[in-house]
Amino acid sequence: MARIKFALPEKFTFSTTLAIRITDINYGGHLGNDALLSLLHEARVQYLQHYGYAELDLAGKSLIMADVAIEYKGEGFRGDVLTIEVTAHDFTKYGFDIVYRVTNQEQLLIALAKTGMLCFDYESRKVVSLPTGVTARLAENQGNE
Image 1: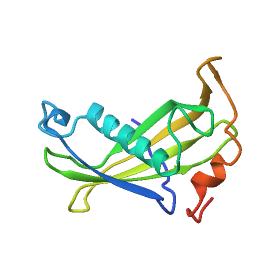
Image 2: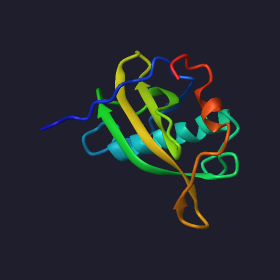
Image 3: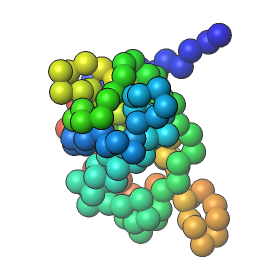
């Protein structure tokens, strides 16, 4: 069976810390896949806010998630404080990927992930072009864009 693999950018431009809550634990006694996706969502919201954007206000447009890929590398447990590093990568006319590296307080890799984000007009229900300046702003300080 083929496994998901994706290349990481050279540099992450934002990081945040989030604690694993009891409600994030599944019947296996570790961080559930649905809970990890929710933590990535919170990290994405904080990342966009860092640049003055929001999912529903990206320089006057909105974002919608087109896809998600997660490579699980380790387990997370209740009380672990995760560091989630975030950056935008692989820009196109209509969107970009947001890439995440998730580690615990011992610097052990928990997961790598990416969410494919498209610029979207919720009124017309159609994909639209990224607003001018978004790519340059989100790619600043990466050194690889």
